Figure 1: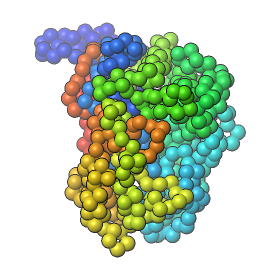
Figure 2: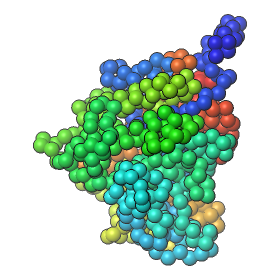
Figure 3: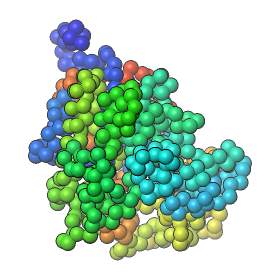
Figure 4: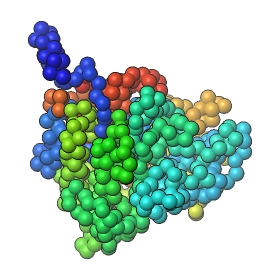
Length: 561
């Protein structure tokens, strides 16, 4: 390393170029990939500036900070995650939302835990169904292990997926479509697995094993760990957070403990399970710590604590405990500040483990986010369903029944701070132009900011429709972006959402760090899709091995190599 450093420095003397990394011509051995869901670029700036995130600040002293990073559009967790690991947007990957619609696939055999109705599958023809890739496909979504038979209480993974709750492919003899085969392009995990490298990932649903990309049995992920986040809260013996909280008993017994996301305290214990899994992997073990394993070439996790801290209004407390921000400058509330402190301490735990195992210099650390959260400014928030209506309600009679609000037992339409509309155009008066005219006539009560359809839609995505007609079965006919701060929800428990195209939804943290990198802030526009090809380049593999990189022309991040 020292010899190479001298050579690069000597070249810089004659060219006038100052290298960012002495390791530019080497390859790293590992990439630790961290998604802090909800964390904006401004959150990183504020947290470091006010001294609340010393560990992130330390990474920044030897890292490149990209301040104008955008997530995928749509900015839901599912496409947001796939963008990071595949290098592609929904246009190539085919993942628009964890709950979406496919004009070809058939319904699951039995009804999912969240209400996608089971039904029949007609082979050799387009069927059409809502697709769910979240907790509703677990064997038992009330359990932290997803109902995996014989597993420890907190040891969830792919085995928790119930194939009877998966959509089916009528052109593959009605076989269930597992998450990793729902996505259309390969991922960094598939490329690394094919190269004989060991891979691992930890996330919030068994369904997010989609990160592995197309394979027969999900084998691109050697160690996938996914305790179900929307399960009932339980005590976690032996789990202590990086801030010293003992999680052996439930921390917040007053909250609605049907989900870890309903409490500012409980969510930290949930995330701590995955933090411990990553530390075990750094230490040469599997996620449980029970068995020896190679240190993965690529591994990491998502943090959910910041996202909960941004969104939650906890009405089980008196007075109500309100997260989010205090102003348009993104000053965090006390609950949200606590979530940032927890995440920072956890990242410090990763760095300490890398040091103790002699891996820090050979590991590239990437901190980013699947999505942001909108709005930052609390004065801009409006729960639109309380004061007006939603696009799906206005167009309910034109939607497939599995997507329609008229379905009393269904999972409901795909709406957060955006509305995705798939039409049943066999119904008279339900063609796209007529539906758009209906939306325009109700624009005031829908708080419409912009409607994407026709050519304004196909600049971003493929043409919607059936493949037999040259269309893409997953692309919505219409996308409605509401006015900034408006969400298509009537919930009184949340004050922000994501999924849309707004700046607060899409401008996220992106920090790439290693001891050999020089501190640099890059204000050029970049995208989270550029993380995937950058990871492969850092590990000495060809970024063009990624399908989406070739299809969409995704480049590696600038000013790094």
